[in-house]
Length: 134
Image (cartoon, rainbow, N blue to C red; front, side, top):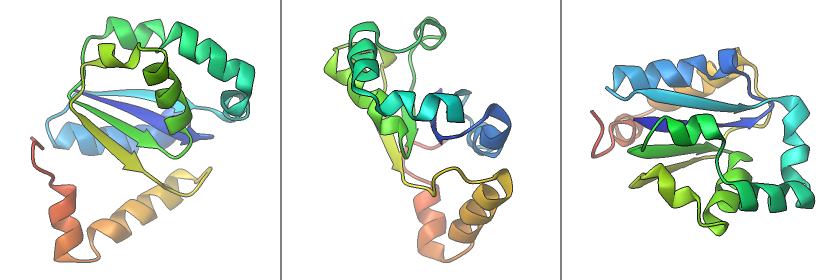
């Protein structure tokens, strides 16, 4: 199982290629987008205090533990707050992917970026098949 925290401005439909990739690798993906209306809010200090206190959303906690957490760009703010509040450990993960992609890409840009990296070299292809991948 993998929890994917989206980049600023991400939507469920824009994150679908990431979910499909993880499904092909044998993971059950759970997507947590960060839509534009939430992007600025997630960088606001009072929001950080709230995220530290409350931890991950109930739907994430209720879905059980994860093998991997995949963080896109600004999602690291949420993850940091969850860990600082001591509630991130409940995700049960042993792997973290820090993924720095362009902010607010369109689905086509995301697919072009991912496809370009995957097809760029044998080394990139090996990195995409990380140890522990299914």
